[in-house]
Length: 311
Image 1: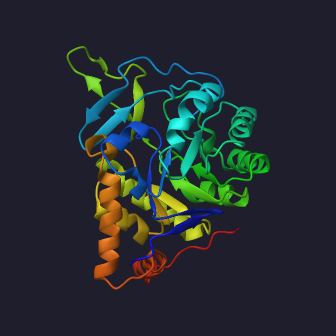
Image 2: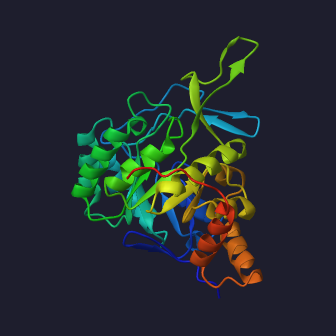
């Protein structure tokens, strides 16, 4: 038996496979055995209800999809009373995704979740299709926001970083210095698609977030760069569609991975990746997933001279 367990703060997951925010829900249990998954992350929850962006909200593009949902959700009160009980019945750790327009809103949402049975928080500071929701572009703002959030909760805190920055290392270090238990990256990339018949953007919000296989090389690069300077766990995501994709993220420095867009294509993909990682470790004589991360990352980094970043 391979030990696939990993730890994020005080939270221990049975394996490193997590289903990403906005791409899964309790209804997925009709199509797959969610108890095989390490954890699930809820759709982002705001303080007050949000109606989201104008339709169309999604469109397929070459190698992926654009989405412009706009964080539609019922607000934290209704989510906790009406939605959360179904999530908690899944029997696996449930991480609440939190989205605010101000630091005060983030704190209020977390305070209302604190007494519930959620296992931790993923802080969405980087939604690319909601105006005013990208706190993740300024490392100083990130640092202060992370500190404030950590003061408000005893549960593990994961900060979801934006790829739409010039220096992902600065963002990762800011989050680490602020006391976060982990970082997750990457969120979606800015994208646009045009309808040539009308010569107008297809999405109602004009732009959206690009996800799917087409962004995997970018995501791998950002995870690798963050791992050069970051000591806290990194949760890698972006274009993961199979076991090989997941293993590549572990090789470049991720402690865990998230599967997002591909849940819409194959609802059983998370369980398949868990099985695939276990099989890979067994065939290669690896008894503990953490040894895979250390060995492979070292091999990946061999003979690479890295610039030192002041901490």
